[in-house]
Image (cartoon, rainbow, N blue to C red):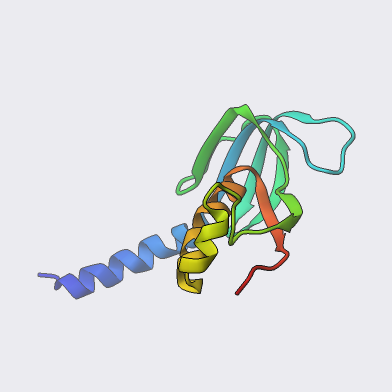
Length: 133
């Protein structure tokens, strides 16, 4: 009878190579690549680890272990860059008085909400132009 540790080791030896070679395929209806003058239609972006390694015309079939992200009705484009943001503050009717009772930890904690909004709007790079703390 196999011990649980031995079975786990065998499973890891068999499954790990497949997982390490797994790719992510993004099926995109439209791709704006930032290089071509016209958008590309019906494209598969091939991602290995954290890099796009290929753009293939059509929707490629996944190999065993590959992950597919279906964006057939969406447009995929490079991340946007915002060179002037203030992630630690947002103007509101309370902005003036908040500076008297919010401490730097409060401000930092709250900035995660603004960072998430910025990311969800398509910005992958920002330049934060300072804050009080």
